[in-house]
Image 1: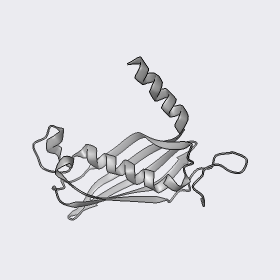
Image 2 (image 1 turned 120 degrees about the vertical axis):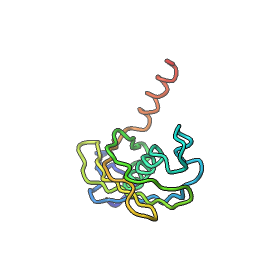
Image 3 (image 1 turned 90 degrees about the horizontal axis):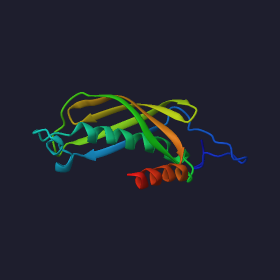
Length: 143
C-alpha cells in the first residue's frame, strides 16, 4: 500500500497489506490505574491496556484508511499477563495478520520495564464514516 487512500482509481476499495505494525508508548499515570475502575491497586487497568492495543492497531493501518472511512474495534481476545505500576512506560504493538473482507485481525503484545504484560488478538472492521455516524445519530435520537 502506498497511499493514504484505500480506493483505486475506479473507486474500488483496497485493504492494508498484512505485516503492517503500529506501536504505542504510554507512561502509566494515576488516571490509568485500576483503582479508578473499582480495584484498590495502583497498577495499569486492563481496560486501559486494551484501549492501547486498539490505538496500536489503528496506527498500523491509518495510512491506508481513506478519509471517508474509519476502523472500529469489534473484538478482543487478550490476556493481561502482569501488573504494571503507575509511572512505568508501556509499549504496545499490533501487527496486521489477516484480512477477511472488511475485517482485519491483529496480534497484539505489550511490554513494560519488567517484561511482557499483554498477548492476544484484536479485530477491527473498516466502515464508511458517514454511515457509521448516521447510525450513531439514529441511536442517539432513539434513547
